[in-house]
Length: 200
Image 1 (cartoon, rainbow, N blue to C red):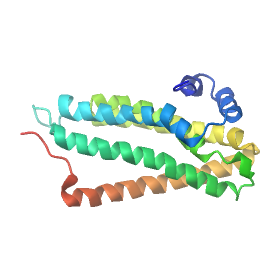
Image 2: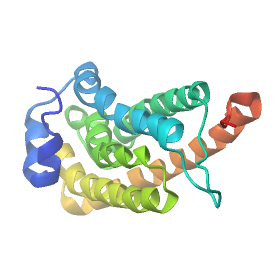
Image 3: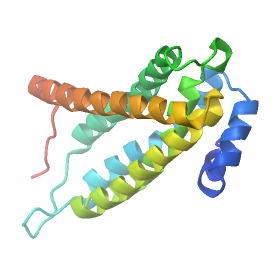
């Protein structure tokens, strides 16, 4: 069923992680039924927010992007989210050996995809691009994603909680490094002329 674990991750996360563990999903199925759909939320919301609502920066008239510019940037954003989940999942599987996780227990892609769920849903707020509102909701999304990571990793990988805490901390560090790399890549892409183009 499409998005079958989404509600459970918010209402009873421990039980839902256990359910995810017993119902192992292949990478294509996980992407089609979960990641591809949820990653659309922040991308589509950002498109409409930046082209229809706009934001105010000390001016009376809202600042908006052209539709072509917003489409380019939001498409790149969407692809970056999908790639980020995949790369982080592979890193998790790579690091799993260090933390004594058996080969059969390597579930990095599932962990990355489901832990990112709150971030995807928090992207809805991009419909109204107010910097303070976006930051507040974004921080809540990040906090709950981190909680899901720490809570779900030992359950999904079938390791003790103490070792799971260290493993999750390593995953969080990799995620932060990937975020910095994404910001640096964005600056490089903008230098090639794919940056934002504002309406007059």
